[in-house]
Image (cartoon, rainbow, N blue to C red; front, side, top):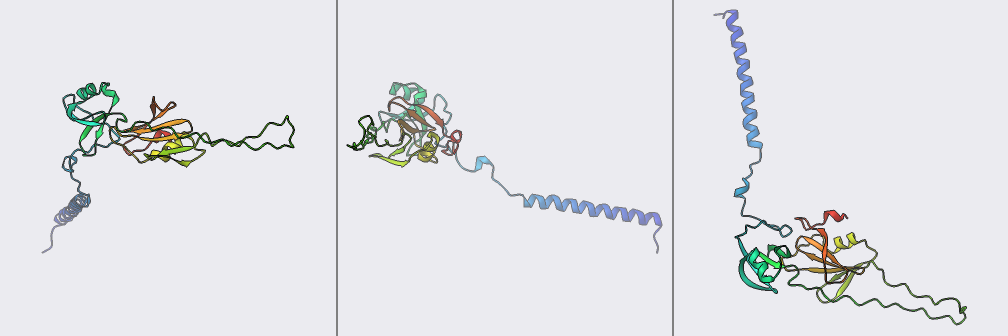
Length: 225
């Protein structure tokens, strides 16, 4: 039996709407399945603190305290500073070898080493046939911008003619140290010292000041390459 024209129109429109709705539903569900599932941050493990960033401490929180290079027990940051006779800003805070939070004075475990021996300057032999007014020529001294690394027992050259920034990058890029530890280098007549979160410089091997900050990846972005 033939359907009236109006009924056929209604069926065609209704069928088209059903197809569109089914396609939309398929896109929604397939998009949800294709999206990678990622666990919420809270379920991805415990708190991770990078050595290159000092953790924020509550005043009452205790951490492992070191005095004169020795572990003296748990203490708040203020109490640890008082035991060391320094301000809290003079303590380096981070993870020690046990993986626990610790505080220690800067370079407490690694005082500055003795300076490298001065390079020998050779005097060229005097030519007896030369004019008395001609000054004796001297051999050129070692480069004033030599870059040295202290290995714990001796100084070793890692290059010459470097800029200060290039020397720091060659010595310490990618390296972080724990609280109380330090690594030393030399650039010309300047002593370099890597301590937690920064590299320092000194012209007298005693008083150090910050040269550049170290980021969470143990790099020095402000020095460039």
